Length: 408
Image 1 (cartoon, helix red, strand yellow):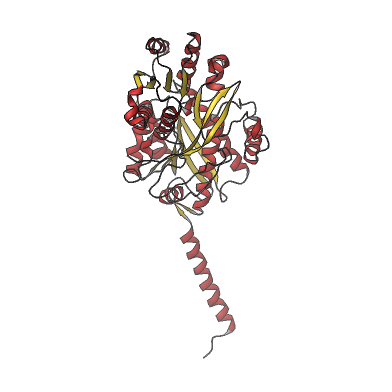
Image 2 (cartoon, helix red, strand yellow; image 1 turned 90 degrees about the vertical axis):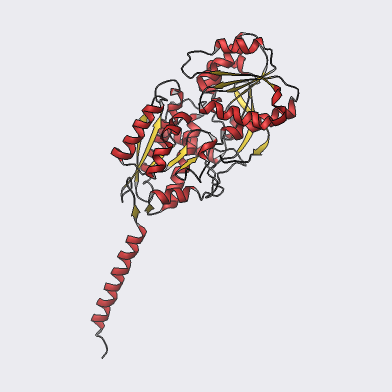
């Protein structure tokens, strides 16, 4: 006996309703920190203490997420960015991360700064299966998906960067006598290790390796000691405040070695200006970002977006400080990953999508440099170009160098 048409319609409606609700349930998956209306993102920054100049990165990220929220958020969800100060102190960082995970219940801990701090809470976050995503340090240890599947870096690793400097020196100054100044912690030692390994049989070019403590108010005495050994190359694996002191002291001594500084310390506003532009001429480094003051990017579409963002959300900011570029690029990468997650905002899916980036190019990266990740490669950026300081800005030279990204 055929079913009446109204009964058929009702049956279809019920079936459709069940199918739709099932589909909706299948699509929307949440872990702590995610709802229909909000995504909680946690962060640790040294807003105070010896590395406080990096605090601008966190402020830039907060402003970027405000812009995204003003544009409607991510798939309709607003970002709640919770950023705490750790004073560049590992014990304080651990305390703050526990607060983010256990009290604030964030979905991810994003772009927290500093090798010592991130090292201190890496095991905790991996045990809790909370993404430690796009860590704001270039230690090579962040690219170890086998042992730490919840931790991923963002910038080029310090060892990769150090390898590029070693290759440059072996090609351009093969008979150089090199003095290395490095910070006596995981940050400095990672650079030092990569540099020495890349020199290989030529490691005898290094005539001294001088370490300093982050707590030291000045490194002037270390610079005087290095000069007494008469090296013709100084390589500084240091943070911004120490880089400015080193460049200034070398200049005050009337000393003219070839000087290479780490990428983390190339901010014109935070390093070269305080050091004095006269003292900074000819300093070398490497970078993967465009320069916010370089006129060659004035018509670049990505940098136009960046400039508009600064105008509206961070008016009055010093555009010579490349923390503005770093924070913008890292935040843009996180937004891309969260967009890729769709309605599956589980921590596992966040890591899965973060490990699936293909040729993603944030607005602030140099041409020819892109972000690529996979399940076995957690080093998003593995390319750099050499730069030389001239006048009041950095100049690019040479080609984009792509480095291998070894895991430990």
